[in-house]
Structures are given as structure tokens and as C-alpha cells.
Length: 283
Image (cartoon, rainbow, N blue to C red; front, side):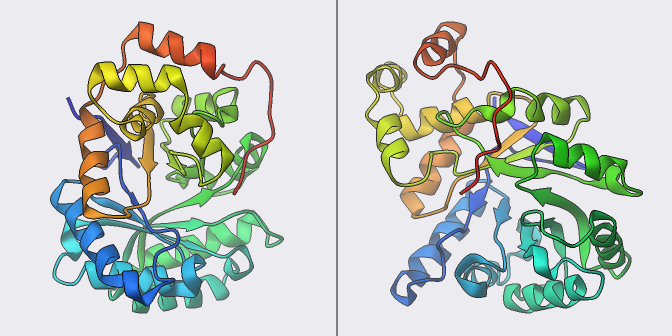
């Protein structure tokens, strides 16, 4: 059984998508990046996430190239800088993203993180973009529980389609309050860096004896185990970077991986769930 997530009660997607952070930074990697995204679409990983921030628009250009002749096969997500999220600036920023992506609409447009522009103004900008047909849905990123409460209380705030946040086995803070609230409201959570970003945390996860033992018993990689763990929750979609064709194929296979109660208990012993409110992790 492949896990799925439903956005805005209208579109159901596989619970693993494709990220593009760090794409577009090295011209020598461009064709590999394009090929990886296209392979992901062929594997059914239809959600592709990018942002105007990534490589100063370079990642959007890579995604745009990958989608030539394939736009209808993708559910395309991009993000706007908080200082571009005003009523006029957001429209202009979205238009720049659309040009780089070689498309005339986004399926989902996110406020990348909260800035100084009032939420009510950003909501109005998103609604304008929807009326113009430039975006179909809008959402936010890096919003903690309190931020979401404020957003939902604003006129039009209930239309927020998702919150994209850092979530992986070594960063479980959202499980205390943010994730349960979003699940109650039937609003999906998008998990970025589901394998943890490169560094100590990533090494700790990949080298953990318990995780390696479970992965070996299931005949999967630790990375696949970590992805399966992230999407075990209802309404959570993971967006690992699509770094190569092989990795994308491995990511897609993780949609079929189910964890037993015993395996989850063993993982919880190594990486306990939060017992109190924690600040939202951001990278």
C-alpha cells in the first residue's frame, strides 16, 4: 500500500515528493538534477517543491527545465521570501517564479517563513494570485503552533493548505502540539529535510545501530526507513531532495514500507517523542 496525502480536500498525492534545495548552484550538476526530477515523476513522486530563495532562483530554473513537456504530470510548489509577501510585491515575486519555472500557474505557493508583513496582507496577496489564476492554493512554511493559531484567526486564514516544517527522527518537536492540531484540521504537514541535513544529526541517524538493524531486517536502506518513519503519520508528506535517479527510485520505494508496532517502539526508545513544548526547529 502506497501512503498518500490529500491537500485542500481536492488532490491526493503520494506521501513522498521531491525537494530542490541546493539545486541550481553548480552548472555541472544541472543535467543530473533535471534527470533526477524527471525520474521522480516517472516513479509517481508528483509533488515538486522549490523556492525563489534556492540558488537565487536557480533551483526554479532547474525545475522548469525538468518540467518541459511534463507540467501536467507535476504538482508544483514554490515559496516567496517574507519581505516579498506584501500585497503588490507577492504578485511580482510570483510572476518572476513563474517565468523561471516556465509555467503560468503554481499548484501551491507558500510564505517561506514569517516576517514583518502582517499576515492579513499576505493572505490578501495570496487571494489576489488565486483570482488571477497564478496559484491554485496557498500555505505557509516554518510556522509554529502559535503562528498557525494567529493565521487561522485572520479573515481567509482557514484557506491555508499546508505548513511546511523541519521534521525528521532527530527533530520531533512538532509532534507535541503543531502536528496534532494540523491533523485535527485536516491540513497536511510537509516535512523538509526528512533525512536530516548533512552534519552530525545525519551521521547519528545513519550510523545508529537500532536503525541499521531494523533496516537490515526489512531489507531496506536506513534512508528508506527514515522516510517511512516520517510518513507513518496521517497527513504528512516528506520532500527529500531529488539528488540522483537512484536516490529518487529508492525514495519512491519507501512509500511501500510499513513499520510494525515493535519497530516503532524500538525507534522511540532511541529517539523519544517530545514530552513538552519545544521551539520549532528551522534550518
